[in-house]
Image 1 (cartoon, one colour):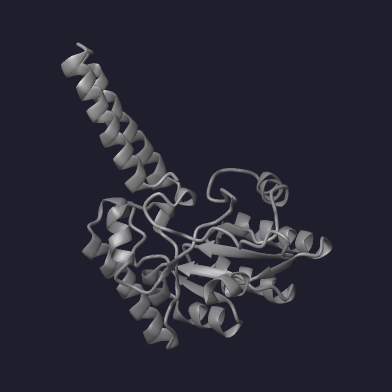
Image 2 (cartoon, helix red, strand yellow):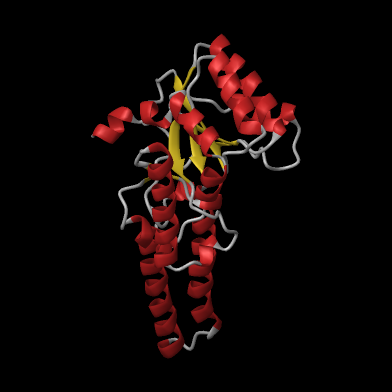
Length: 258
């Protein structure tokens, strides 16, 4: 298992093996650097790939691949222009989704937040600021971000948030420590759309639909017009192929209860 603990232990073991080689077999000192580089590279990759569960455990899909359900999720909202359009499309297709919202934006657009809840969608914690420096924050500052976002949701909706998605999908020991001080459950994804990149709607639609399996969690963002168009086509594809778009709550219900 590729985890921070296992890779750190392996790196220490490799370092001492290299040290013995240097001391007793006249090996080159360069061998002492290699275990350190190995640890650094693996930790950097693991920190940016939430699917590895390198620093903390996150749920990336339902274990039931025979399911005909998938969960469509949206990050970084609510957005005053695109989130209402997305909600209209979901309502027209009688589909449910999950919105991982930034606390600061929740405060700015409370009516959109209320509509998300009113129409039966799931809300999740996506930190308060979504700072680009989140990966460098200490555990107490990250905990403050999570707590503040939960407080905003409680004040506006009277609702306690259950789910959390790390900003940018980045994890590290500080984020793990902060998360352990809450009762939030981390959620990743099994299909990443890359809808924030300068890619065509056709490319994004094809990227998602050719990968879909039962129990998938799909990552989108409700901050761009392109995503609105892709969502319309995606929901039509799901309906035509006998799939159901549900919330993370519904998709992971049995596993949560376990």
